[in-house]
Amino acid sequence: MAQIRSKGWWYPFIILGFFVIVFGVNATMAFFATSTFTGLSTQHAYEEGLAYNRNLAMAKAQAALGWTVDTAVTPAAGPKPAAQVLITYRDRDGEPLAGLDVQALLSRPTVKGYERQVALKDQGDGRYGATVPLPLPGEWDMDVLATGHDAAYQTQRRFILP
Image (cartoon, rainbow, N blue to C red; front, side, top):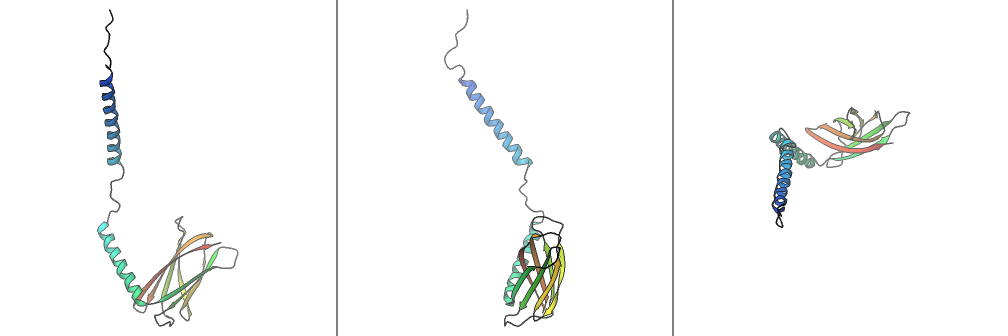
């Protein structure tokens, strides 16, 4: 004769299945939490913090100079892509700054390997410029560092070369 099961005989299996699923999900989450991102975003946090403080001090010193900088980047005529860069430096009294060493680094924001380092020549009246041949048209970043007069002045500019 067959034995009749009582109502709800499977309830313990539902509870057991629920805890097995919860345990499996928690084990999976714990595995991914410990095996992927370590939480360390930089290897040299202390040195980078000091550099950040140094950059803040340099920005404050740069602002105290009171220099005004006008940057113009235009496409240069010719069969290949080129940019005509012209930067004008003036002191706090509006007088042109001569005798600066001006270096520009042009780079692509999306593709590495196309960096161009160029020295901008003194063109008189505080103007520094050069025609820079570029390998590709499109978007470019330009970081400029002018040193002289016992000071350094850094500017950045993004431009599009058609």
